[in-house]
Amino acid sequence: MGNKPQYLKTAELLAERISYGDYLLTEIPSSRKLAEEFGVSHIVARKAVEKLLADGLCRRMENGRIAVCARREAAGPAPAPTVAMLFPAFASNYFQRCRVQLERATERRRGLFRPVNFVHWNEPVIRETLNNFDGVFLFGSAEELDPAARELFRSRKHGLATVDFDLTGLGIPRLAMFDASCVRPLLEHLKLLGFNRIDCINTQPCDVETTRRIGAWLNGMRELDYTGILHNEPVRAYEDPAQSAYELMRARLTGEFTAQAVFCTNENIAYGVARALLDAGKLPGRDIGLVAVGDGGNARFFAPSITCVEMPDMARELDQLLDWMFDPGKTAWTDEPALLPRQVPLFIGESTVWKRK
Image (cartoon, one colour):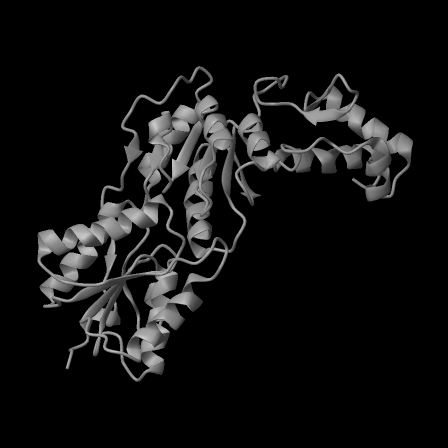
């Protein structure tokens, strides 16, 4: 290994990067930049790139620059199919937990998985991702989808699926980790415990999915026969819904707050509500019931633990989507537009099981 020519060592490092998908969205740097990065001569860097070209890992474009070969262009054995998780650039346990399922499903297919962030719908990285990956799982943003982005997704719907974000009207399949129907088990659980006044608190931006969850709570009033008030004060995109929920709940508690239980549209909101209750001397589960859509996965670790709907195992549905994405002759999606979980996992936490006064 130590006697291996320097250009081969450099070529192997670049090939390893290519195997991890590092250059799927960017061109391979020039020989001059590679020489500076690796601390080698320009000649060594150029020979390394020529080795990649000879091995069919990359190609020379008309402008003379070097790009990684797409799966359909590569010579020799077909390289691994590529899958991108395209999601908004803000911290979220929900995104992390979705990533685990997507990455594992891709690995089962011996594919290459890459997470890709975007900030706004017209960011160039979105088009680049759609053009350079065999399959793309798209997550929604709090920003409203503009006409240009909608047309882009409509034109590139083959190999594109959304996660908890509905573009089925464009012929794009939807993986529904948390469909609005997941709200019903939470409300039924509260009713079985005798809660008849169930308020709804939402402070996250009112995207389509959040609006549907609020709608499910409203439908529950009629179908399950309870009363309640909607406290809907959405924050702006990328602001903290937990902090806003805390402030909202503290303000409500200074007045007349008659709810027996609170339904939160997501887990982060429930954290803010729970802390406000505790700071006011009220214990979730004893004084007020508290439930949430547990899309972050940490509700069971909060003290007290929060009753929530947890993320379902979507392995079968992901395999179905990946089979379609990896099919070289794939056509438009023709199965059910929304892939729903077979079972909605309900975690019963301390926020509803303690005996109320």
